[in-house]
Structure formats: structure tokens, C-alpha cells
Image 1 (cartoon, one colour):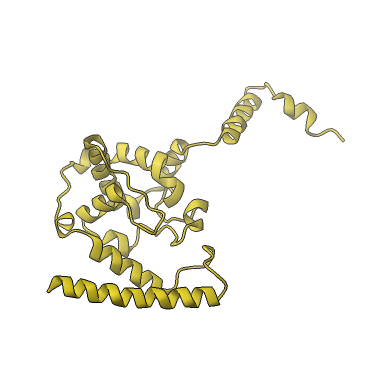
Image 2 (cartoon, rainbow, N blue to C red):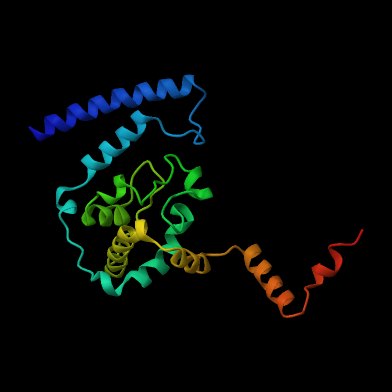
Length: 200
């Protein structure tokens, strides 16, 4: 019976996707600049829910929350914030350029997922989205469970925590160079560029 339901849903989903393809191509292509339409959001969330193994939903986080938030925050700042932002809102360049956009993880669609569902998504990713699969090792599993605790903490992040995370975010070579120059300037040793930049 379940197979018939899944096949029926798959067929309906195919019709919806076909209709969206037609509408999108008629409306100017598959640009990732546009916001996803309601049918796309609904279809994506429904597909994610149906694809989630039932035993994944029921898994309990084995990691003690009280001892891991700082470590999870560092991991988030270094690995996740590039797409999701330090605050989890997804309002960063990479997150906004994806299609669908990175979600605001402080809000209900993420926060109402079970710990097991969040863990499954971190470990296995989500197909046809920008969310990669980070799983594959026992050490990684522990890090993923810690991240689940941090995701739960996102709605309550303080300004101090966000400022702390900004110091932990990866930096490009240009940003590292700029920091060096600023440090030299503050120490009284202006970098060579500073002597030539303002010549007329």
C-alpha cells in the first residue's frame, strides 16, 4: 500500500515539476536569482519529509548539550556560516545566491524538525539544494550532533556570541593581508602601499 502511495505522489510530483519547468522556461529560464515560488517550496519540503527515513526522525541526540555549545559554535563559524550566516538567517552572499536560498534556521520550518532529522540532513545533505552531505565518519557524527545543539541555540544567539564568531570565520587572502596592514598601521608601521596610495 505504501508503495502505491509513494508512486502516486511521485507521479503527481512529476506533473507539478513538469508544470513548473514549463512556467519557468516560459517566464525566462531557470535563473537562481528569483525567489522560489510557493509550489516549489511546498514540493521541496514535502519531498524532504518523504525522503527522510522514519528511524532518522526518532534518533535521540547522544551528546550532552551543556559541554559542547562553544565547540559547536566554532565549528559553525568555520564551516557553516559561509552559507547560513553566523546568526543562521542565511542572509549572506553565498546563502542568497543558492536556489533555493539557504533557509533562516532560526525559524519554525527548521526548529520544528526533530534532532534526528537535523542530524540526518547534516550527515546526508539534501539533493537538488546547496546542502552537501558532511557525514562519513564516527568523529564527524559527534560533530554533527553538536551542531544540532547549536542549531537549537540559534534563535537565542547573543550579540557577543555573533561578534565572537566573526573572529572565527574563514578569511580570504585579501582579508588576511588587510588585517596585517591594519595591524602594522596601529603599531605605527604604515605598510608600503600607504605611502603611495594618496599621491596625485
